[in-house]
Length: 249
View 1 (cartoon, helix red, strand yellow):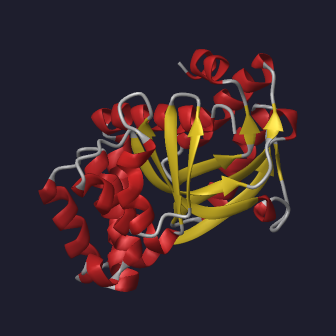
View 2 (cartoon, rainbow, N blue to C red; view 1 turned 180 degrees about the vertical axis):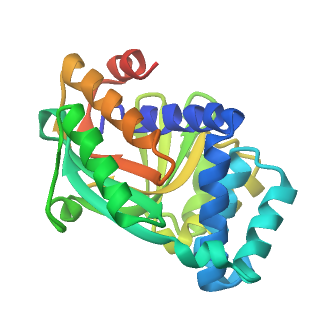
View 3 (cartoon, helix red, strand yellow; view 1 turned 45 degrees about the vertical axis):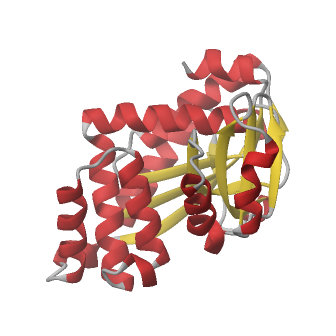
């Protein structure tokens, strides 16, 4: 588990930087539009839309942008109809398993781009089902353990959290995907400041990496996430937090 929550925090910081460059806003807008197209414009009855909106708010996307993206999805929605969710499975340096979530209007283009990035950075594309069994979908909320105690997080348990663990200097609150929004709201309602909050593919086993392998993996993940079609990259690596901070900085 070492370094996992540190990685969540690093990803959160990177997301903010990406948002300032405008790249993340494009991806988030697309995700909101497609979620609204598929499940309607009311986040109360559309968990996928609620999650997409939460991510957009975390990245400080303006409310007007969010509302326009929802309107596009529930209106004519020609753009939304063109996109589909695709998950690619593969391997990175050191044999790390990768799940790559994409939202694309051209499977051939995106598949080719993903394969190229993997090959260029010491990875390979796998067959469907080759690594998916190594992950389970979970909500993960990270809270500063130096600022709060486990007792402060009791509202999370009452709201349905599966577990509260400690990783380095943070608490990691784990939930079922369906309970994520309720647990997050309970913590925020109790005045708890969250370092990061996401629904992610959590590894069930982890592959230890040395610093050289971790450096190569971070370059691969950066290359994949630089693709406008790629939304999330999940990996089952295990790296010491101080090493991870160096190589991901």
